[in-house]
Length: 165
Image (tube, rainbow, N blue to C red; front, side, top):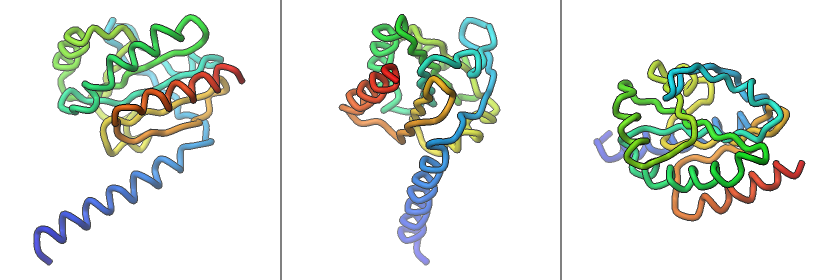
């Protein structure tokens, strides 16, 4: 098999696996985790039960992540006071790069560090970014792979709908 066919096969496998992973989490209880945050404290997902929580997995080398983060921060600033939480989970091996990027972009939502990729594995993350939206009862309601301009409108609709439940 030539290199091109191998790459096409690998890409197809990743797309197929990504689709299965996404659908496998939807409707299930969100796996609980605790990670060290950018402020130095550990944050645990289950501490936010009763809130609508968006978990955004990202990396500093991911262009779409950089594009999306200021828009996510706007959602966070707008809806935090009414029961919406946003946890940015960075998967870089070196948290200093992530700290530099959040400082440069001026984002205010909590950023957690998953250098060992254990939480990313729990959430079957195999692409960047991945955005998971969890309802007030702690169940995964939406999983989004990647980011393109306009996705934030979909996030907004989903968040508003879950806040009304």
